[in-house]
Image: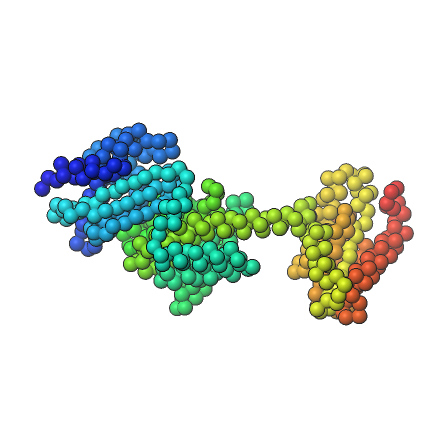
Length: 472
């Protein structure tokens, strides 16, 4: 039966960009070809004369062509077309596909017209070059409540990773998934870091992929091509997992080896920067539509919250870290000291000061670059001995270490271990002073005692090596 004229009139009856889609229905519940049958003038112009940044694969429209003539295969688009045309559902989505620098306000409406196993729906779209908060908030009451709860939980969190764990746990429950996580990417170090993860009770950590392995970054880097320009990847059955296989065979093999049958993968993007991915495995396929609707908004908010947390963490790192050595700086030491100023410590604490001998001589004779190398070597020696404790660079050549819960004998042994470690780093030589505050002193007295002992040790050093005395 030829409904072409009727379908053209339907498309033309819309004032916004609209086309008619056809979907071949299969007896097994899947679908065959999905075609763009026809469109109104505004829709055809969006193909033939696209706005900058919205170009498709071709600028020539051919009626009744498969949609992949115009854009890379998109499982999400296929799912919406199928549910509208075959399942007769009215659907809406507001999404930002990676392949096009615009937000799409999309509506899919079922049509009663059918040709045997060919079903039809309309696809209407509006394009926004900036995200519309009105469209993002145009969601169901239940979804709005869940997203608001997530936003408040993260905004007020004192422990951001713990709050993110609650969020990812709720997400896994929503998906009825075996595993879910938020994976952050560090492009400079080419490493992945799990920010939060959750397992189904019957799964447990042994069923999770090894996401922080050194070679996993290359896998995560390949996901952009696997998503192929869409705003996410949702593969809910074997047919859709075969698309993953075609685009990323090595990753597909890894998924199969981990007994992963379905997968959700959403990029986390803020200010056009890819922060990482939210993903879930072995989710309930019947929840695919709800998952996409939820995460299109939730990931927008999560990305913003994660970006803010990363920025604050970076600022804290810059304010508390000595850039030359990577140790904590004087600011961070003052924060520690101010917490106990004028009072007793909650437990015995060892305080060790180490002053680098001979730095001025190295700077004067070998240059500042050699002096910088000496300072970095000194930091390496300190880390070697005090790796699990907080080590501070508190001045040009001065360092401090705080060791909670140590005894006098243990701290004395650490001081000797530091001298031995320094000897392995060429010209590194420390003047060392230490004190254990075990309730008999307050923190200021303990600091002064350690400092006095360190300077006494330094005087002994320069007495033995007068040629290296400062100022000479």
